[in-house]
Picture 1 (cartoon, rainbow, N blue to C red):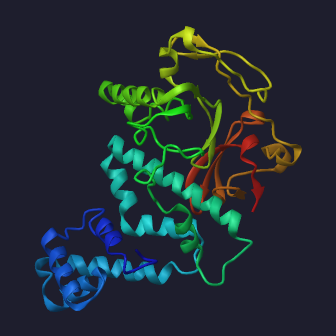
Picture 2 (picture 1 turned 45 degrees about the horizontal axis):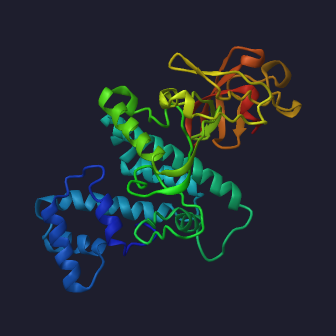
Length: 341
């Protein structure tokens, strides 16, 4: 909406998120003014304040308009991840989700972390080729525009279809790959806290599996990069519920060592990947690099930050770092690929 102030639908989505006390009646009056004068809804809100049509909500509308104007002045020229961080902070949306504390809010926070990581990757990939006509924010929005192709989906087309398990309901394919079958992803961490949520995830998993007409591949990663950090993964509990006689286990040749993954007490033939050892260049431990509290370092995803704590030593050494943009993170030295800032 900041990039395109005439985006009325975008404005409707954000005007009361988080809640700002701008009621439905106030918005309808602003829409009527905008239609009558041929203005976008944002300008309709301004006119509602000027004419008194906003009523008792006038101060709240003024505060919202001041927020929009301030962000519109500050965003131009900022790198995309900084721009997103600024909007999340100034709008109060991040704080509202943290305060809410529900599983749904936590899932949204996870999505925002992934958005920030994606934005950082986009900046790193495009910083060397600036566009003189369009801002980095505009280019990023082009890339991540949320367009659903399900209505125009042609099942006979000779191409790969990428979709969610929810979107796959009612569809069938000769071959299906279900990826991300790991604890915390499927089932999602927020759904694993209640029997009802877990059962809904199990039903959704069944939907995904039964989309396959001929053959189904189910993939589980031993190690994954999520939200800008690497983590070891545990195979989904749903894998242990599949009858053994219908499974054909395939292991990756990349794994330097193999051992059975244990899921829910049942041993399966799923890989656990040993993480690659870092090169000598990144042996950034306390003895060799003299790392200490207060030192400035640079991380490939999180950017620059200050070391606030050094925990342990040798291969298990961890650092707690206050990053300028990403907040406080704890990283393992041998996997973080840190550089002196």
